[in-house]
Structures are given as structure tokens and as C-alpha cells.
Image (cartoon, rainbow, N blue to C red; front, side, top):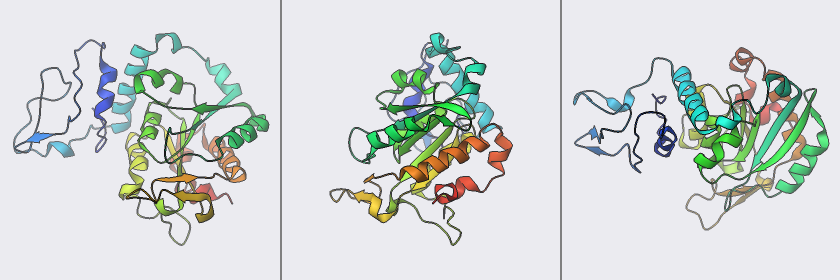
Length: 273
């Protein structure tokens, strides 16, 4: 039961061993005569009415459906981490992960950011731990994701892994200068566009909270070899702005209603300058 428009075929592998056999296919959404390809061992793929719009089918409660999926795969794949951190320990510590891609769309000053982050000491009155994160395979990365309170990374498919972070955690997506547009109030403009695909996924699941950092032109380094250089840009992140954003993230962290009712997540850099 995946939320509407959240097509994540590779994540079906996480259900292996849950109790029902699951096959992995590269193209779960491929069709024949406008019908999805169905296999006996694919959960939730059977008896589609030929006249129904199966792509528009949504669970009644997308956040609840996703959280059921997430907790099931975490419980199944990370038995040793089910209680890796007690609630008391989490109340005293904040873990911030800075994700680095292996190539393209890299954080150019990652080491500097880690140094500054660790030098903070505390964030929102809690001890802060800052980590470098490098994703390789969701089956390998799933368990370490459970430790993170905030994940910071450049636009890209690797950020979809943040959907598996604990409920109430946060993602800060770093966007290069040509990969976002804002209105007169510096709010994200046209959030339904392709460039906001990551944001849309998080809004549909409504469990991991989405924020975004908009880099300026001087801090964005487009890949001139790419057909989409604005997207495929390295970024230099200004630490004072990111630090300010982290403070605002922590202010809203305990209360989901406060996040849902706040305009800050839609504003570039959460209003920090």
C-alpha cells in the first residue's frame, strides 16, 4: 500500500522474508494493454479491473500505510536495532547525517560542514552528533537510517532512503540555484513540478518532514557535460544558513501539528539568511 505516485520498485526487496514471497522486478509499473504486469508473488498486484485507473489508486490513509510498511521492514531487517537507542537517549541527543554522493551533485565543502557541525556541541539543548553518510544499497543502509534525526543532502534519488527514517525525523534537501524557483515571498514556487519530486514523495507519506536549502548562484557549480546542468550541480553550503535551519528544524521537531501548520518548510532556507 504505497502512497499515490510513490513508485519505488527497488524497495519491494525489503519485504523478502516477511512471510509472503516477494520477487524483485526492475519495471513493476510496466504495462501490457494498459494493465500492470502482475505476478503471483507480488503483494497487492492482482485482480485489476480493466476499466479502472489503477495508477490513481491510493490507500485511505497514506501516512498510516507507509508507516506500516516502514516499521515492518525495519523490524524484519534490523532486529538488533529495534531498541538501539532508548527514548530517553534520543531526548538527549540529535544525530545529523550529511549525505555525499559518489559522483556529481556533491557537497563541495562536506568536511568543513562536518567540522562546524561537530563544533556546535549542542542543538536545541541536546548533544549533537554529526556523521558523513554514503548510501549504497537500501538493504545495507536501512538500519543506520534509524539513528538519524536529520538528513542533509543534495537533490537525487538517494534521498528517497530518508522515507525510511523514524517517524518525525527531517530531511533537508540541498538544491542548486537553477533547480528551484521561488515566489515574491521566497516560497517554493510550483511544488508540483519535476524538480520537486523528492518533496512530493515526503508530502505523500507525511512522516519524514521535508525542508529545503536553496543555494545561490555563486555556490552552485553546474555540470556542463549534463543535459540538465542545473540539476546536476555541485553545491557549496553556507554553514551559518544550515546551522540556522537546523535550529528551526529542532524547534518544530516535537510537534507534527506545528510543522504541518508552519509556512517555514516551504520557504527557502526556512527564512535563514
